[in-house]
Image (cartoon, rainbow, N blue to C red):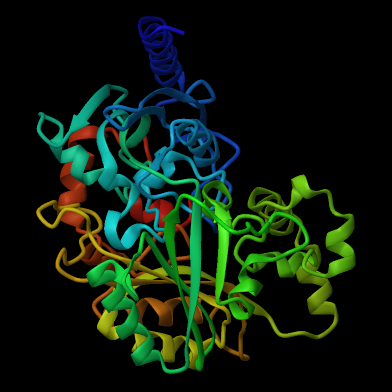
Length: 458
């Protein structure tokens, strides 16, 4: 299909979307009618007009010379990766779950094992078309009249507008990724080693392209480093009976195809598939392989949130009420051992995921998620439930996490449960800058504000 034809179809889809947006009741908040979400927590049912954005999924173009891709905002990373790998290219950062959309990762946050050198997905965006809250479609770039939206869109979670089309940078890949799992027993030494690998981009004289880690216990920590290679003596398969995170404890070296590496966490939703029994060998053997993926587990979670069958059964058995603690936080690397010690003492959640992150461009300023550009941060991801003692509030552990992260000079991703008081929230997430953006791009308040969406769960 020629570029003019693609452009015409896109322009027609934009016109139809604007008409649909205008036709929705102006007195009710607008919501996207889509099957996936980048908010991994329940939301309260609320009235609102549903906007059909199904026309905005797909890759418009991949330019292998310029190493760029034009991508519609509702395109999943699974679709995007399939299109770019055909040209031996990949997005600079690929979040771990296949059905995360590019627009969702840019308006929220996405972190993966290339983040120590490439930052977050929004840092590879060259320009973005946004349907703003006031119903206009604007193109935001770092150097045009909508640069305020370009730098304010990340971490806005669809409360300023929706990404319709994005042009992003790509990077070349090789066919395989060699993995080395480095075992540590002491957290301070572990994070010092991670920091050194990220600083030099090398380990034992070999280039390092990817860095993440898995902590199974306070004295069992692994740093996994990945390197692009042209050849592999073998490749492992973690899409069937074998489980990736378990291999970290038992193998010192491994090889995966690039595609399997990018989706190594998706098959078991990291380790969260345990809750559904599919890590039991006989169960796993009979479950069709096509259902071993994160969106299957998310649908099961959604059913439980709606009907509460498991929750009622647990209560009938006399088990204590449990708080769902699903979080990703970032703290400076020199405070990461402190946070890990707090997390183990307060929740005993294990395993946890570790991923280093550094802002790609030290001169950029991302208004709603400000990190020190000269600092290496450690993302800690933990997703589980924690028993509540009698009399403890339903958000006890989540709130303790927020207080500790702030104390350590970090930030918390807003995709999960948040319990911030409103004043504290706007202090941490740059309320003055957000209000200016809201006044310019959604003065009528057709979209929820950031606090209402991410804390109140409206």
